Image 1 (cartoon, one colour):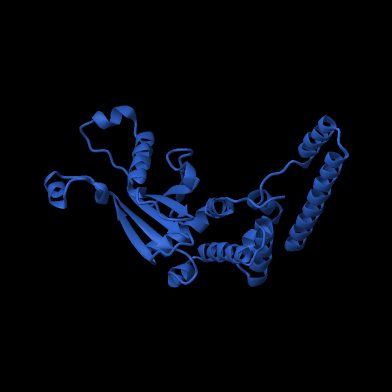
Image 2 (cartoon, helix red, strand yellow):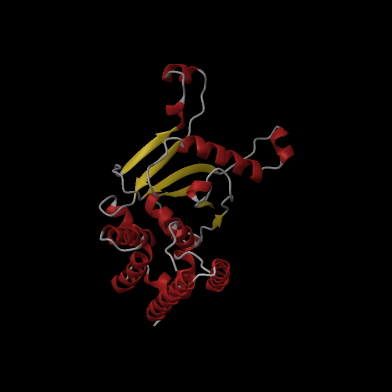
Length: 276
């Protein structure tokens, strides 16, 4: 079973689909102390503008609408423009069409945009991206025209950056450590699936994401590993072998099956040990 190349986004979205983890994360990022009495409503829009970022998560907390994105490589300078398009769609969906024609002002949650950066290229601990940086007109012209602006806060969550913030969110700290461990394993020459397996075992030993990995050990392979239907694969490869009619094709087919079954057996064994 091959490693899921989108494992970082997959795990991020899964970890922070939990309101308690989101509240903890937001308190760490915003230096607030929202308690369990403050509800969180997750309302991520699917497949809108952020397909390449996997549309990580957006949610309301208090009177704020937070768009939270996990970014894996370099930070896109067009993020403010894309967030503008996203929040416009959000407000459109939450507002009745006729309401915008009423005299009485409509109240909407305050938008807040946060990108968590965990790429390998050098990036500062924190950076602000502004929509106005993309404007063709000068700053003076923008000031006189009553221009629109939008700010995106980019936070580096790689180990060694913003460690104090990471300490405030156990889930974010564990996620950061897991991603870094997989990356280190790959740099040592491990294949992705081996790198992920080792990182899971390491996290369990070190107590990072332990509760999550313990509670969901049976689901881990489905999230972090690419789905592979061995029965369908067998049918396809047998068909290929019959069409080719060569002994070499038959041997290659059998070798594929043997390798996959051995890999699946090892993966199941690892998951069973993690669940003990």
